[in-house]
Image 1 (cartoon, one colour):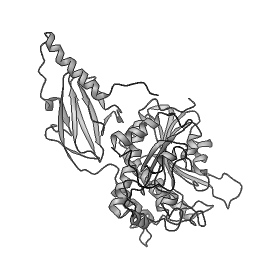
Image 2: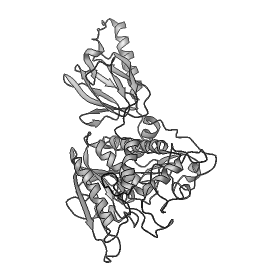
Image 3: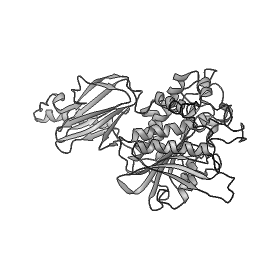
Image 4: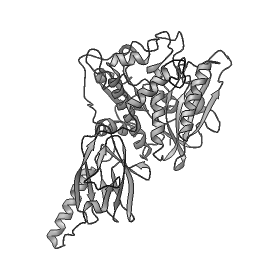
Length: 469
């Protein structure tokens, strides 16, 4: 159990009450300067600025001891990293930072707390922006990667990405993904490991992009598998496009890499595209358990890992019946189903419940076809199945086994998505089963923002440690 904490809002209320009471004991109330003389957003008075949802906004706050407080769904960044409590104080002459609104913000009320403890709140004008990670960009990249045509500038045709020795289609796709990360400025490597004696069986070929952190004693990461189910693979006979499993997660990693250029990370961070997930997590295991310059370092603490696999056919997308598809997000390790074991579970719940405002108790009239390993009797009809669990079946298991705290994102699968591991797993089919392009874009944008916020907050949460530390 976590120790009781006074909420930020209650703290501010108490602060203002004490400041008001001070006047009753004879202290003269200090007249504060106009807010636009000490605080600007995008070099504009807060009275005139228009805040765009999903976008970065720069701010400057002047005056030693003055502080800024933001609501839960506005992310406050200073020195390139988020402040999870949403509160920052000027320690010199001025404080420079950024604000990032989620795409779901409808109103923004900021509070300036002056050095004497008095405060003033003001509401900003909000309009719809172009989120730094968004469903339309995801759809555009999905169409390029999965479409096949004669002109390679119009369509990539990066299909048939099953892992084998050799598979030219997989090699070609891996080079394309490597170029994406390198073009953004990441130190990027292709990790190739022949981890068995039979050259006819799949080997491991991963794309690993590295971002240097402030603390070189720890490491953390995100990833998705870029390989797809090979021909004849169960349960659906294999696929060639693998749109849902797992081109969807692969493209999300490409978009995260672009967004993370703007942030600083606490620990050395890897953004990875794994191979051979469908053949037993061989790709992530090769990275985690081999000794090479760009493998997982064994002299650093592995703090956490977030996994993206089979997303988009999930809340808020609707089934043809009108019921929402299931949305799964499981944290771990989960040693005891009766208690919370790891701090990253608090981050997982906070992002969905408090920041994104997801309907955590939404249920369907019936049950879903597949779900978590533990608590399923309580969750079988729950739309947002978000909690600690032991569920495996993807690359997060590799890092969970090493003591990392993990989050695994997964949408509908097995009985809830009949095209799983079949030739029908195409982008067109994904669009069809959720009722259109816009619906698919919305569901992808929601889960991508959830994962991105989880990473940013976990990065700045010191309590998230390797469970063996």
